[in-house]
Length: 216
Image 1 (spheres, helix red, strand yellow):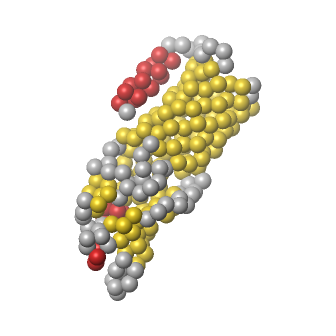
Image 2 (tube, helix red, strand yellow; image 1 turned 180 degrees about the vertical axis):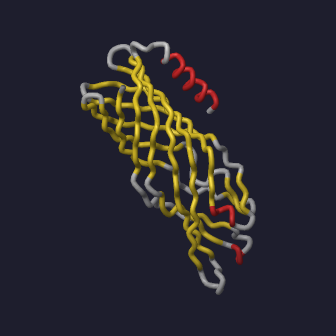
Image 3 (cartoon, rainbow, N blue to C red; image 1 turned 30 degrees about the horizontal axis):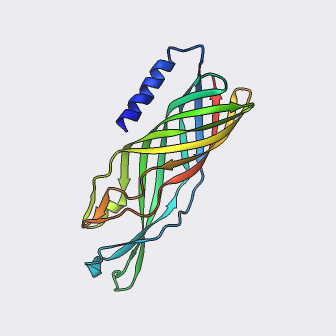
């Protein structure tokens, strides 16, 4: 991840010296809300009174904003790197096997992350269309989770994660409208545990994002 970060920084630095081939874009985007379908995991099986099932329940709409640098290569190919900010908010569904009255009890727990995204793409221009694909580093700058209220909760989750994206956009004068699929390379809950039981669920975050890019 550090190597990718260094490569991205070098790319942006070298690009700044090639002003005749570089374009600066302002980029914004939005991902709609989603309700992931995941199989729940069972936690605290050795402690029946504290046993519960957990699954990802809902991801709220996500907004993006940042800058992109585009460097033209030979023919129709180009490199594109940048930096953007986003906030991801999601809810977990907790089903306690034995609630306060001894019956199953449902509880929703909220989590939010403020993140800096550093994508690096290679793309090709086909007429008015651009097709892009690449990797990105996702840096969590702050995180709050109500899962920390669970007795025995522990986390060693890394603030740096790797992801990827691919998309297509259409240019109208100096404005580009597009759609991207953005994915992570780590599962939800990775690095978190309760009493030594991993909270990693069978879900790798991914979402479609609708984007608008203004070139200067």
